[in-house]
Image (tube, rainbow, N blue to C red; front, side, top):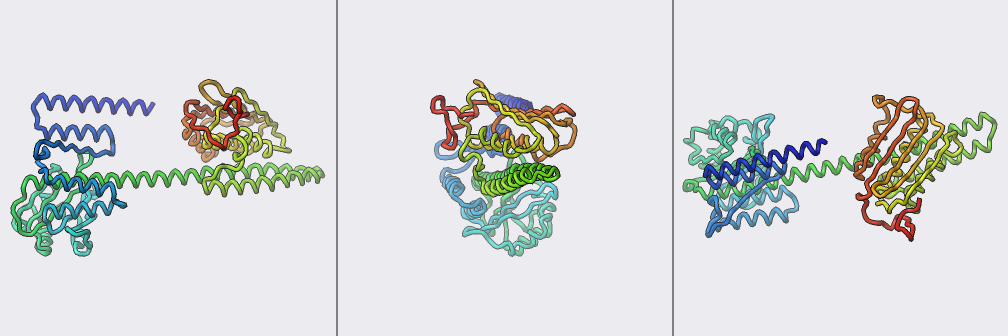
Length: 466
C-alpha cells in the first residue's frame, strides 16, 4: 500500500511538472528557464539524480558555452568514467577548472546546514591538489564566509558571485580581505554547486590581476561545477551502497549464526534433558543414546556456524533438497522426545534456487526451535504443497501459542520475515494463547530462478522429489 501511495505521489508531481513546463512555453519563457525546469522535473522524479542538458547549436553550445570549451566537459566525463577514486576525480576537475580559467587556485566547499557554514573539502592549482596547511585560516574559521554578503547572495540566489577587486569589494568582511591580501588574490569567482534545487556548496576560483570575468567563463565554470556535483553525488550513493552492503552482511551473519548455533543448542538442550530423564529412570542405555545425539547436534551446529561465516551453502543441502533436509533435521532434533512429528507433501515442487532452499530450511528450523523452547507442544506438523501458482510451506504445533502483543524472540521471527522478503513471498503467523502456532510461507512460482546442479530432480518431470 505504501508503494502504491508513493507511486501515486510521484505521478502527481510529474503531471504538475509537465503542466508547469507547458505554462512556461505558453508564456514564452526563456530557453534557459525551460531547461532548468526540465532538469528540476527529472531530479524530482528520480531522487538522488542530477540532470544536465546541453544543446548543440551550430558553432556553440546553447546557454553560452563555447564549442571549443566542450573539450573540458568531455575530459571531465572521461576522468569520471576512469578515475579509481572519486576524490581523485574531484582533484583533477578542480585542476581543469584552474587551467581553463587561468586561476591561482580552485577550492571546493560543501555547505553544512546544521552549522550554516561552508567547509573546505579540497583545494588545487593547475598541476594538482594542494596542502591544506596553506589555507589553515579558512579551515579553522569556516564561519568567516557567513560574514560576507557575497556568500549570502550565492547561498540564497544560487547564482555565481563575481568579485573583481578583493580590496574594495564591500561584500567582503575584514577577515576575508586580509586572507586574500596575504595570498595575493585580487579577484575571485564563486560558483554554486546544486542538487535538487538547493545549494550544496560552491567552487571558488582565485586570480591575481586579470581582465574582468567573461560570461562564457562563468558558464563554463558552472558546467564543470555540475560535473563536480555529479561526482559528489556518485560518491554519496557509493558510500550509502557500501553501508547498506555492510549492514546487509552483518544482518546475514547475525541471522545465520542465530539459525545455526541458537537452533542447534535448542536441539542439544532437548537431548540433554531427555538424557537426564533417562538417568533418573535408571535407563543408562537410553541416556547414552541421547548424549551421543546431543554431541552429534553440537558438532553439526558448529560446522554450520563456520560455513555461515564464509557464506557457504548449508551442509544439509549438499546432497538432498530442502524438504528432505528439513525432515532429517526435524527427526534428528526430536528423536527420543515426547514431541510427535508429521510430514505431508502434495504436488510437485519445481527446482528451487539454492537461496530459496536455504531460506526455507532455516525457517523450518526456526519454527521447530520455537516449538521446542516455548510451546510445550505434543505435535509438530510440516506440510509442503505446490499448485500452478504458488508453493506453500506450513509449520504448525498444538502448543501454548502466544498473543500478537506479547514479546517473543524478535531475532528469529525477524529473520523469518527477512528471508521471505528476499524470496518475494508472504509470511503469515497465526497464534493465540492455548491454541498453538501456525507459520505459513507462500512463494509465487513466477519468482523461481534458474535450475541449479545442487538440486535433485525427478527426471520425468523436472521437479524436486518430495
